[in-house]
Length: 233
Image (cartoon, rainbow, N blue to C red; front, side):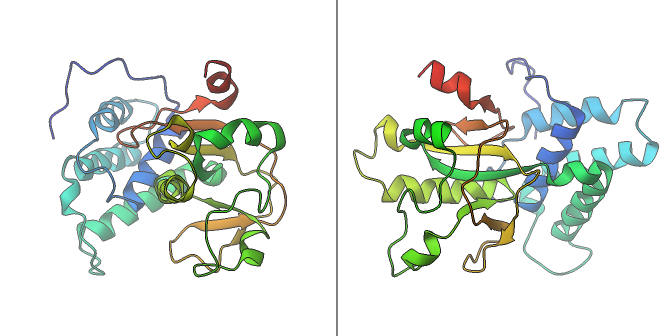
């Protein structure tokens, strides 16, 4: 993949934010194809940072190599496969991050629900998405559901988009990803989900440092403070 030098300036991203995004992209590689220009720009800069160990610099270069050839990540259990290598690199970045590796969780929803969520938090059972053929109303009303990867949260945002009322092309039904801090939340595995990394909280969840992503879910994510977005809607 070539890096386009005409890209707009890359938003300032901390090193931890870069590593978190690389982990997300490595373990959930199938969504965006070749949209990796900004990843490569930031990884190239980080791999030349003299304060980083030589081993970390080499790891970042390997991550960039995988992002240049995303089609090489095939679903195989061979430990020599590119997919296995991507998972190994993700594990190395998680070790580098330490406790920061589990800093955020993500919730997929739609634009029309943001104002209510900002005022009340995320309330179990407040909005119906699934019918009883998919999951029982009692189970859906028992918790607020999240993922540990923003890419997997896109699936849930799309589900909310398709199951909501109103015109499908309206702003109200536009898919949105909410990112919040996970600190202090009692996270449990979502036993009903077939997707990995799905968790839930059996209580109303207040929003701690909420940011959202909206629009096209591809490339390096740009997170906007929820309060700023609602102030300019």
